[in-house]
Length: 438
Image 1 (tube, rainbow, N blue to C red):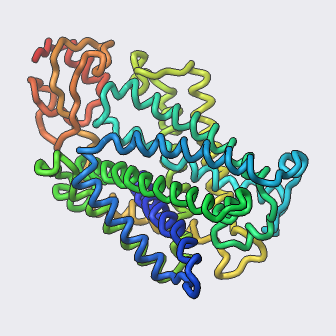
Image 2 (cartoon, one colour):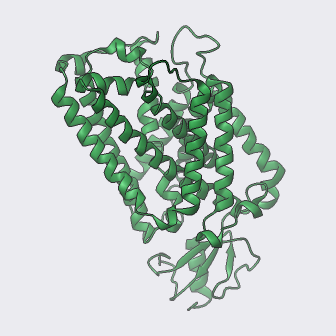
Image 3 (tube, rainbow, N blue to C red):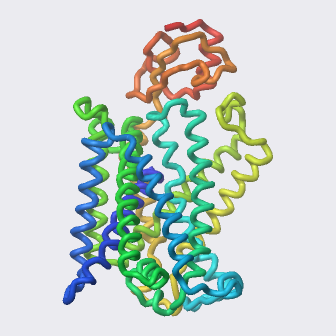
């Protein structure tokens, strides 16, 4: 539930970014002043566009993500090279030793609270996990995708940030601009055309990102009802055979939720910002809970099989799990600080209030519905060779489908549905009692 809520809010935040990126374009026409309802209409248009694409086109054009990846890296290289070659450079001392803050916080607090930006940059880190069922050789592919996300994200973001810092010639102008990155590109390249070109590329990338986020979020919304964890689970866990097994109901629900978030933006910018601020908090909570459970189980091989596709040395795993929890606690405290001092009703950070409201919703859903229905994931196994206690299911080329629950228990046959049994324990049970062949 926590991950589902965080990804839904993430979709809303990206839709707003896409609408905000289009604001500078009308400024080239005299007499036009963008209004909030203009942003709202663009926001909802992007929301509906991503729904349409995911419903009718994505399964036929999986290559679109490859195009988005190439466009992203191409824009990164072209932007950095062009800005560095055309701009008046800042000195290395200004870039690497100068620290300025106008927030009212001391330097340490200002630095820590500003980490919300790089954390948001990696906000989609866990996306590959939720698409594992649609991935070939998931035990190898998903870990590689996660590590590649971190590596590419760090290298490109760090390089881009340093490059743009060298290109800043008017810091005050950037701070007062409605679109700082566009203003930076215009002044660095000394060309409106170049700035617009970069902004168009960035807008297209954001649209690709929104499509990918809607895809990921719909799989989360679909998976949770599939395990009877949400009200109207039978409805939202359905796949649409006419649309190549797309979770259409989950996609539509996500679009409706993003639409409602947009209505919140139309009514109150502060309320919408608080909602977006809770995205990172929810995501860090979901990461920390998993790390805490692994530590509680002492990283047992029952939950981390030795035959898994991706392994790190056990001491490294302990450090990563503990570090995740520590980082989550620090961020939960710092990311609810107001952005600046003195604090007013408008500048107050209400993310903590939204977080409590969302957690309350999760608790209510548990006691009103899920407590009576949810019994953990139910898996359908189609076995094509003998399973031994030490065999990883993917190594045995087992096709695993998460399915609706059944009362089959341990009386196994091909296509049986097994209830709430860790896969490694299930393998041991199969080996001890019988040989199951397709």
